[in-house]
Length: 440
Image (cartoon, rainbow, N blue to C red):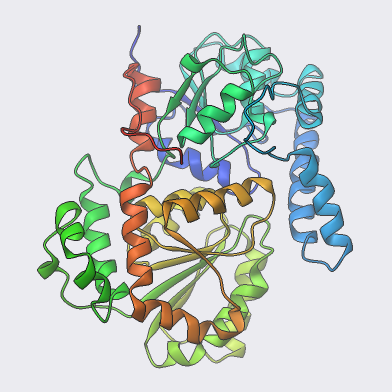
């Protein structure tokens, strides 16, 4: 089979998850990463349809925090994209309303012009959004089609209507997603268990030199009393480095708080800021408030810094860029010196593979419930306690060595080489899958 140096990479601008998963492939993307709801040549009619879909997503996600009625509206939306219980094993190939909705839009022309354009030079096509894979198959894309899955478990919408005869190839983050797709009717030989695509600049090469260096620094901060190192010294030396090389923190605990694409968690970020104000002033903690690409959230955070007289402190900063690609670059950069990530159990759950312990906010939607279960199973995630007392429980966690253990469990148990595995499969037809695949 023909090997390629480039591929088409197609994503969707809807939240952060699909675009974050596409970001690591920018160097291999012919013509740059393509956004299916905002590509060059998109018609006004198609753009309007996509804008409606995106607005519904962001509106309902933000609306969820309103008392009573917000929860009811969100529950109704979530019902249409629910992930059914895995057990007992049974045929789950029956189509859903969410699927039928997208196929109806595709039959009306959604995505047709893009596939026609790409068919002029059909390279392998890798997409992080299921509807883009639908479009490619429906409009007879001439190249191979690959769909990278962004969550630890998925709804029926990720497999096409006629899943048994589909030619879509799946690149999945764990064994559970592979087993789930087979219940949806996808053939075994169309599914590759690769891991989630993490950024290369946070990993390094096959030796994981960046990841290991960052984790060594992180363990110095996360285990100030040496509790974890004393108990698990042999484990650390077998999989990371001699314990003697972890000998003292060179920075305060660095906490990165990241809101989702709809910005609905901004108020929680401000509460965390206020409760940790004294720790910030005492230089006991560095706080990164991640506004993503949302200017309104960035301004909200900046205003809070001024109101709390923290705008001139170097150890608190707002991470923001209106351009999502630049935001992802900045975010990946600050993760290298981050000790603890506080976020939703979104696609960022997989970043635990970088040796990052994750404090989980309340899940939003069925897929985040399953991501939370995955994080707990891996051992890299802990549920947030009452944020009103974060200045107490966070440092109890720290001194106990619990966060250091979560960092190591993520490093040991969560896959890291998804980007490399996917590129080998898509570009070179070299089947790279996770070794010793676990249920999770």
